[in-house]
Length: 281
Image 1: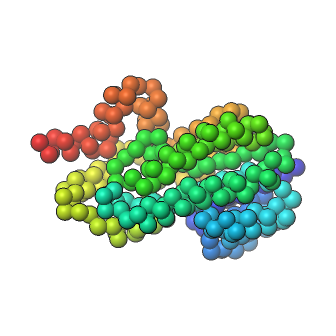
Image 2: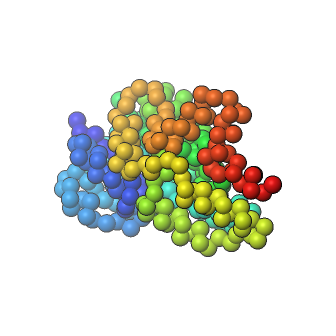
Image 3: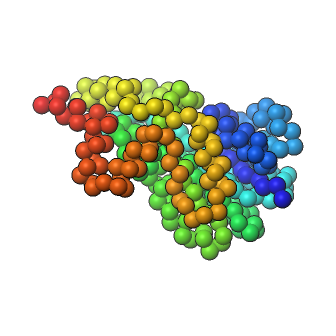
């Protein structure tokens, strides 16, 4: 029987590539986005259903899932990919910006999972894939709201991995590294332009931003992440985490294979924090 997956955030970038990859592997795809673009369905006739979905609107989520289930006859997996970010100094990050990020990155995931669960439980085995990030377990500066939202997804996913085992539903976390020159990055930078940098932070902000520009790792490509998402959705084992990218592989090694002191020292070096301390002396 052909499997069906619902994917959020398919208008561009990783979500779009993931939808195409699942379709190319013979899956039915419910490709959702806030403003539907029919091209995906036109390029994969009979295989892809494009439907509007705003993860922050539970009614919109329910409607999209119901339409997808009616169209394809069931649901075997969901991929929570939709997300937003913002680069800012925490002290000057507006509360509404924090809430907006959590509304999409956390409560949006909650909405989709809760709406999908009654359908997923009807399958003998189904899967939920939550697209997190390397910063979900290894924090970096200037991304406090985004980092906090991804830490929330990491905790939610691990807790659900135990709870939903009773329903034969697997939970997977895909943790990509930094993907440069993507629509996600561009949107995040656009939102960041509106954030004020307080005078006392300007020197530090410029240094931290330059450290991001001079990132010591190669960029993670979207194709590799899409393939990892597909592998996670297809994996019936109890594995929880799928790290993708040279930076996240190193972060994972430091986080879970070394001491806390060594981890913090190395992360300070990789993020430019230790260099800042020397400059500030």
